[in-house]
Length: 328
Image (cartoon, rainbow, N blue to C red; front, top):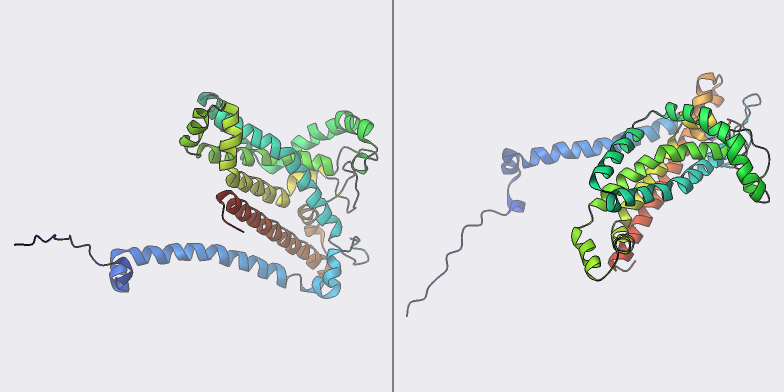
């Protein structure tokens, strides 16, 4: 009895067993090396940035040490410098910006991605992209001519009278201050949240929506209970992208924050941020200690951004693992 054999097609050599010369000849190794260089360039630029900030702030670090982080005095006359008021101003203005921008940005993104007709959604997205491209100095002018007068005549009376017993809304209002800077920052970062969140929501598989609707959910229920949780990782990413933008903003904040190195619980009080004080005083710094203290502020801002982005990445990883059922 004859046995019939099955002839398997030649699968060819396994990619991992191919020689380096063969991969080089086919272009695989060349492409890998070129793209690896591109990726390593990003790391190299970051390391060079940290190196320059570290070496050019040696004098300030040697004199003040860790007290630089907790000292409130910033006085070039007596050569006493501390980063605490500027760290406080940077964090407060960024927090106010996110408090305003996150609900507005995510709500607008949900409307554009899920509820608006395509023609309206595409048209509004075009204007949102234009807002993201507006220079920061234009937002600063917007703050000076619109937000500052509104703060004196509308926002301050509306918050101080009913909520004046809270420390956040006590004291007089000069128009400029933490709240004004936070509002301007919120206007600046909203386009980033909307654009990224909208694209993430649109990338959710259509099967998710149809399955929820087939089970009897309304359009809003399927959006809020199915689509938004499915896209929560990308939405969190858009929020932290906006946070990074708010932390490093210079010109717009400089024009509306007041530029006073103070720490105050009142959001109406003028203050200062790390980026704005560097922009204002770097060209006027005469002594070496003064100049290197400003560079040390840049190093502090880099460290704050690194820590906050690291925490954001950790939060995204934990959220993703919980959503997928993977034990943390």
